[in-house]
Length: 329
Image (cartoon, rainbow, N blue to C red; front, side):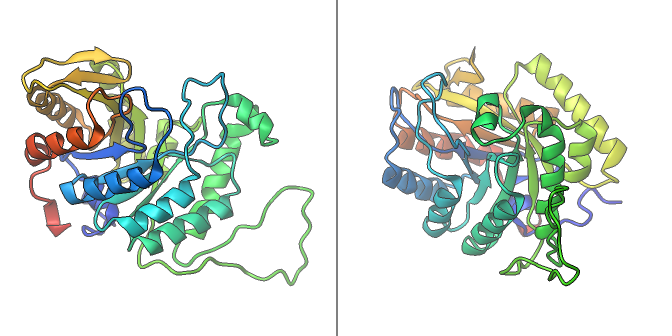
């Protein structure tokens, strides 16, 4: 079976993920040095700029609660509200949730939100799903942290059914629920023109085999090259075992501090690199050769203004990394 079997070459999935190719996206919000309060009118303008410059994806986080004990002080908008605004302000760039917390939201609400964003954006949405990494939030939402692995799987199944063709609603299966025999068969509207891709962001407590079987790909965070090579190997082995020849993507979220000097050599930092544009191209080529299909750059706390970094990346990096799209996608 072809590695692209069952894949529409013009789909949003193919714009972001292609075999043996690498694409570049950006994580919102895009904040300068020391900024912790996002001006979201400005963020929408930066998103439109990223779209015009040729970046392939905008990633939106789901951070439901804030705490003085958390290292991230940014007040993120509700992801569905922000994704709706981005759908209206952009034209070509993919919109990706990175990631909606599947275990803390009702899966039918997630499915409805995903269909809505996909419809508003003209099919440019990829539903990235995760289980969250902050156990205290489970208590705040009345959920059991120890149950998140099973909850992730059952919620994934409900979302996948609701986004299927035809759309099918799996009733809440909790033992305290009793349904009449004449319970109607529900589905979600509006109907989508094609399948909406579901991406695993982090592991959600699942095995790599489960992710390779159920998701269009696996998005993880930056690691040092030796550790990342082990991840590549583990992912390739899993896809060969269970994906039945279907292409399964691998993506990485990477913090980037782009230096003024193009020839500045790369210096590792937490979850990414400080580097010049010329060395960045070499780093990205090594990642592509190893098996990465997408890199989402986090420019937060950049000493340079985000719009300036985006313009330099678009001028000096994107043409060398992206090249022409394959299959006319």
